[in-house]
Amino acid sequence: MAKGTSNRTVTRGRFITFEGGEGAGKSTQIKLLAERLNAARIRTLLTREPGGSPGAEIMRHMILSGIGALIGGPEAETLLFAAARDDHVHTVIEPALAQGFWVLCDRFSDSTRAYQGQMGEVAPALLNAMQRVTIGDLKPDLTLILDVPVEIGVKRAATRRGTAAPDRFEAESLEFHRRLREAYRQIAVDEPQRCVLIDANAKLKPVAAKVWAAVQQRLLSSKLNEVQHA
Ligand code: T5A
Image (cartoon, rainbow, N blue to C red; front, top):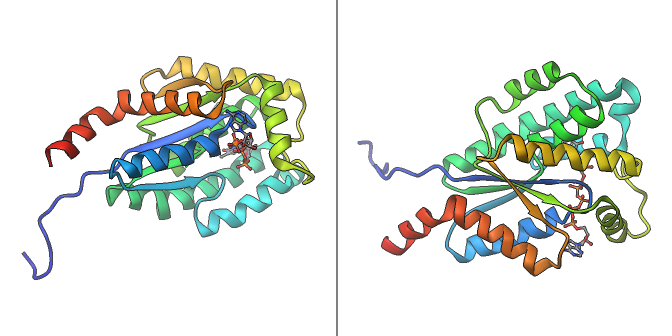
């Protein structure tokens, strides 16, 4: 073995994504989960989409301004999301997982399925092709879908926004948000091994407890045993 190298193998980290409609509480809950995992001595990386890498953060501004939809319609917007994801996956997510970090991502490919697939009515063939190019075999180990009634989510998002103008998606109709909620609920039904639907229509603490229970049940029990026996 070369001088200075080690034969210690690093276990790949776990990949957890948070999904849901506007104002469901994803950003709030993902931070609480990161704190709990860090307290359990699990190294975590908190990231988000669109964005999460320097290049993708630049694209985020373009996308949320609505320019993609304006100049090229839903397909062009889908390509912008895919370009941002490609950079994020290859420069941030995959390297972090390989170094053993648990990656917590605020929105990922299910957002494209729900928003552009269901709402933008982009053809599944284009969505599948983009998914193959950007994420390949990378699938979240666990996806937590936060579910709230549309009126509550929209109200929460408006409160958080204050006097700022709504972004491209926040400005959509209530009917849009209702169909979006259904799209997410369908993803949870279609992929029960990967997804857990969390009732997020409650105060912060009970929602955080449900998130933590799902992580413990799906991913953490074996990991905590490893820590205890280390
Ligand atoms: N998009 C994204 C696509 O169309 N396709 C894609 O492929 C991707 C990746 C991103 C937009 O891009 C779209 C989807 C989005 O529209 P964004 O700015 O990143 O937009 O914002 P969102 O992810 O949409 O975040 P939201 O605005 O929906 O908010 P969150 O993160 O769900 O909610 P959060 O935690 O910020 O909470 C909102 C407010 O509610 C309060 C919080 O304090 C905050 O003020 N709150 C609660 N209040 C009461 N009870 C609770 N339990 C609460 N939890 C939070």
